[in-house]
Image: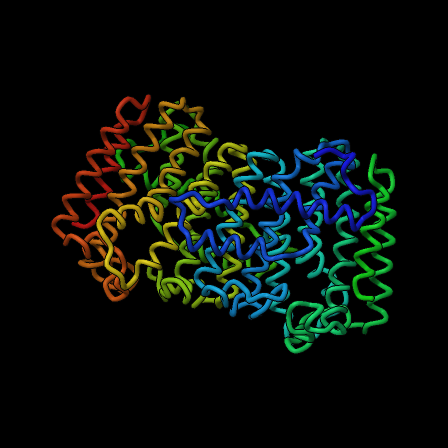
Length: 294
Length: 294
């Protein structure tokens, strides 16, 4: 694996990242004889069931962009995808969003059962930290743990649930998005940056890029939920509206939401200005994120 | 806080540890204005609701026993208790053991709701690793993550659920106990040892002691569930039997189980022989663990 073989265009780069990351995840989820089979099987089902691997690609990209080697960041990239999957598996539970489908397949609690889904999420959570400790060091662990904790994903998920069936302001929606979605994107970029030896200025650039791309990403997700087909989404469309979720389109309408997503993408591009390498990939990625709803 | 003020007898030592650990946990769970209130409240309810703080005491004891300073191990001790609590909160969920009471109070999903209980467990899990990364380093994170993962607690919980309503051999019961209960006790001792600067020989001693004390502890827990009163337990007695859990008394009867617990306690005392300091506390603790059912 060396940078000569890496495709220059974004689509090729993302596909290349996905192949590398999936191979790494596969190795980590290889099942020794003595390991509990049902749990191992559910973990593999959950993580290896498709997905664009956007967050792990950001880990690799951030590492490269500050002069690090992709191969040094691959374990952390796999760990970030495990954390993302853990949060999805728990988010799909009947007591949370109660979703039966994810990426066009049955969710873990439907394919197995609820107890297995709870344990599978927890096992991916723990394994991710084991990997991060080994291949990212204490600093990467601390940062990722922070961004997925009460001030990150979990605080956002809690607020998201509490906001159901209530009127929310755009400011509240943004704050939920920031924590529920942007946090893990920021954590991905910072973990890659730390492993690549980023300066604190570069980590700031990566954080601001991650925040804005993350906010754009969630707005587009909300728009897709309104206008996309079930086939496109891999799960029933319109579920946010049915549940009266706090969304951008639900608060300011589709057109204003598209505009806001474009603004966030532009702001992300400005934030990443001055990053040592791979700036054009960051720019293409920001455009890609908002192009998903066309 | 210095060793002069620490009581020499076990009961006094445990009480002293509990005071220190609870004060540390309280600091970590202090709620800043911007933090999600419901989640913060549920985390405090879950962790600060009593309990003997046995595992954090083991972190402190292990640290001291190899020449480390108690104050250096206090954050890790708090983190271990958060992990223990997270596993209890999830274990109590309706899809898992479905318990309404814990330590004489409503469980988190009964006091709040299921979604809050899932998120509370996850938030304690993440916060524990944030603390461990800061105050134990990458090695402590890796070890704890390993012992609470698929080959530790989570593998044990999965097997424990699968073993319900089936006939299990004593060997299978022991293997479940080893992972479900002994794993976190081993992790507590090793984390304290690592922070205290233990040699690999001392870490081996701590691991073997933890394994045997952990196995004795779980057997006594199973006996208490059979013979204890609801008042003593803080939850309904006989629930293991009702659920046909894989237990020692269920497999070989109460008397043989008591005998086996005593053997494990003796074996633990032998394992800890040669530890530089605090050997008498380890011995008293092994005796205390098996005396709980008298």
